[in-house]
Length: 292
Image (tube, rainbow, N blue to C red):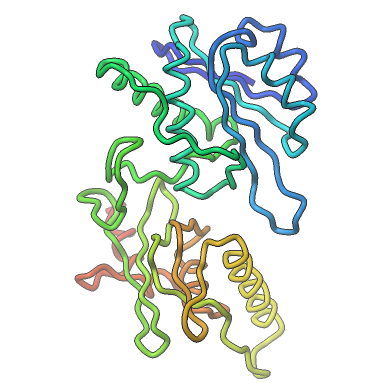
């Protein structure tokens, strides 16, 4: 599977591990570029894994990884149609992608060494590579790889300092507080996904479900407890105090209600009313106003 953007020099190819030999026969296989190995851990509920690398001859490097790394089953190859990507360029892109993917936390990055910043580039090349990286960021989800999805485009350019709580435009920051249980969470829509922000104080365990609740509610509570424990096990929530925790990264949820329930350690919460802006507007009201 290939992906490209009209009038852009970049080119992406997605292949399965079994197709590496076929990939090596394509012109892109012998080019200079960046590659992303994608797989999953063997642990139950384990997060997806990714290894990000670069090479002057990608096909030759992938043959090394066929014997050296077992976890991956897919590879994304990122090259340039005009062959203008140099070793310095791909070293820069490799470092940028590793640092950004590590910050976003959607995948566990299994690189043993984290680049400190890649190659030093002239100012024009630096700007070109940031644009190149943003195009890659756009195309990866189309190939089913959400490694770089979730960056708040309202905050800063790719590779810049990030603080989603200070975004001047787009989604406001929504809050959910509970003084008794010491909950103080912040969230916003990032890349169209409801995202609880790093540094939020949340529940680290589920509240007991009493016998009066029906079986469906008890099952929901059990699933919520498993989800919270998974977030703790993977290091996304750091337990602190008595039953509380602090989020260590931005965490994406399927809905505001799922986020609210997890944050409060409850089976179910109406997230459309629970999350409110600093001036008191509920998420549901804000969302409805966007469609008026």
